[in-house]
Image (cartoon, rainbow, N blue to C red):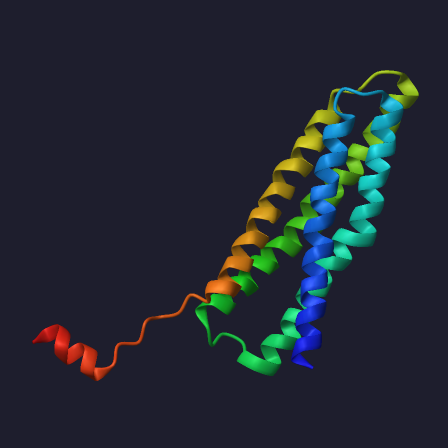
Length: 166
């Protein structure tokens, strides 16, 4: 069961990070292009967020909770507490900052297309989405590092303490 949960956990990571990296490429390709291309790119990003990024994030959360319960217990390990804190920040950031900013960017891009020029409000929504999205990527990478290195207190045996003193 743990191997299956770990597999789903990795699939969630792949969906989450893979979609974000794809959105970066889509954004770079449409930088300075037509408003039609911008709207199309924003539609790709919006659909990708709802069908890949958020489900991947929640797959990480759900499998992480089950693996924690089955193998470690909550609040017993520093490295795991760090991962829990980071994923909480990631979820809150995604739902309360990034998703609304991405929605705003899509709507402003559509309004821009209708008016025939890029509205200045677009840059604000796009930058908010980009900056907080980059923060989430950084946090998920830190979470991965914590899971790999599993920061623990170093336990010194009595023999090591005696030899260090004498």
